[in-house]
Length: 185
Image 1 (cartoon, rainbow, N blue to C red):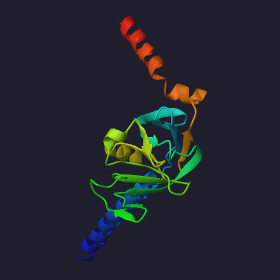
Image 2: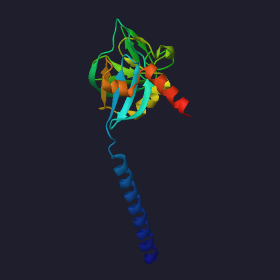
Image 3: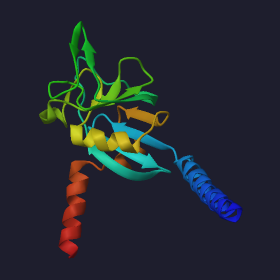
Image 4: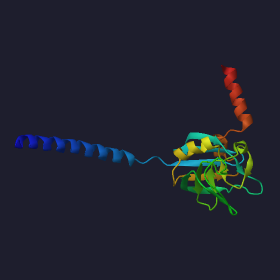
């Protein structure tokens, strides 16, 4: 009987050891750092790109600030991520749901009051209509939310620099390139 108990204890110790090793490995994998990403927004193009090591991961169409409430320009950082946010503006409060003007996700920027968020007005995408924030369709902000972390850099450009022109070719340039490709086939 003593041998049987001893065998059971050895098996239990072996199983526990395997479980501890698996848990340690899983924790080590979770700690693997993700390469830093940066968001580049072209206000005149109304486009946003997510870059990792200067490689485009994804691009999105956006709405930007209206002429009377322009989007800020410069370098910022994502300071928070909020799923299903509540919207507060001049005494109004709108909880999560289809009527929420900031949609299903909010990513606050390091300049007070500004962020990148969804919308309850998807027809506004591609226009200069926001109070200065960068606005995406809710399906797009949900994807962006998963790609970007707190601490990632955000660049809001008011002019078409060479980098912006490379990231977001002008429509005429893009159309000409598409025609060339089609013509070559």
